[in-house]
Length: 350
Image (tube, rainbow, N blue to C red; front, side, top):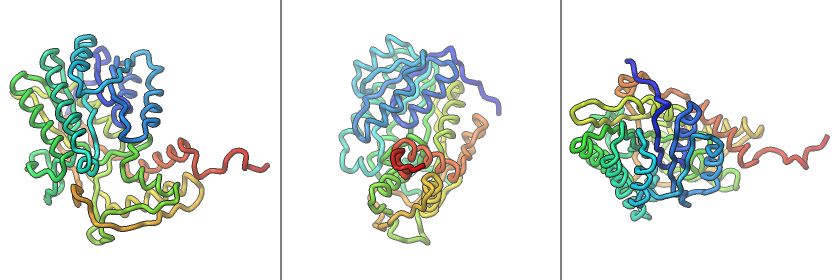
């Protein structure tokens, strides 16, 4: 199916621009000559140095404007829309993490509910061509039917994080219905890659290895009924978003939701073994994690598995980067960025 290509004459607002997906999307847009307004509160949920490192790669672009601010601050958002009048908004700012939501619920309500409400209100009062926003595969809860399809029942979230993402979809639908705001929600499935989020398992496992710590695997050590995850490489995620930006819904209620996943779930243990191999190649030494098996955590689900038929039909795209390739790129970046696993310059003898 044909789709409209990116329009570089429009103004793009990317919230969460210092974040993992926000950075890569901003860079992709800027590389194509687009004007990008980025906003991020650069909080310390994880290493702020990594967030600053991402921003440092965006600052040289002439078309990039960065605002340090919180989407939960309505005045900040209103002023931003009033001044820059974005044509397309991509809301990626959110408090992420399933387990963290159990310990720190307040921040999820602030960022994911109030923050998103502020974005919707701004889109209402300063009309936009398209609002694209991050939902999550977590909305499927403990659904047993796989692959997950957009039409599946999603009223049983098992974490507050999932609840906030389901709430975002409901709020966006309502605003699309009432005010005809064209909106598209994207249910992301375990996004990974270089410069990724340190709170994600693959990153945490790597950190633990280089700090001589064991890795914790929350599957009870049950290899027969191991956890399955649909791991989706960052470049695929960004390509999917990019293709959707100029293709807003045109239905009577202009609101759509799509899965963005790899449509190829892997056993967690296979993913871990592949990461070990990729790190071994990147460091030129054998990497084997010391593994500790623990019970599955509250809020975690046994499997995530995306049907990507709807996305492929809409914009002729489906993610397909194999994890061997994606994890090797992550491993190479990690070793270079953190300067680990290689002899230091002063130790090299000639």
